[in-house]
Image (cartoon, rainbow, N blue to C red; front, side):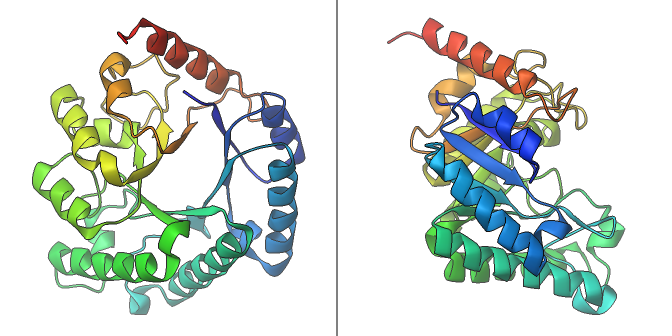
Length: 272
């Protein structure tokens, strides 16, 4: 296992992460980071992180705009300003990702209520159909610089064998958040491990995080119910990964580092 860490566009956070010499680094972006000024600042941070011998850099698309999730499936007529921001920010970040040879991570969905996901659509099936058309488009223009992350949303999640196979058949480059899948399955370890196995070939990035399997809890590895001895052999060894665990102090990555120590300890216990 190689070390992967995450931080915002914050010099103190970045300095804290760089002291551990991570192989992978993910920037957690906000709406302010994709303004013209923000993008110029982000480019400078990418250059700095790369100068620290980080091998792979990921840009996590902003989650929110004016306090609301940026759902990729949203209906333009129901939220025109948020819709415009979603697409402008995505295209601007994709252009930056291609220019700087980094990765852009986009959420296929978040966990908004069904009534919000279906606003402007006849039903949830229509929302899913629109979502997959947009994922197809982004995959086509993003190529090797884009990936899509799962959530616990009914319109884009991992863990259902039929849905997993449909996603796999699309050939998308996938980001697999372990806690999101585990929570969606309400702690069903067998189904969770099967999803990791089914999607492995197309997974290019992992968010490694533990969970009790009931709600978003972002636990340090070893503090939840995920069986990491079963997870490790199922990971795509070509993929990058970061520890997306809750920190007591955003300027101190100690819970991420403890997670990495735990996982490398697990790795040493596995048979050759």
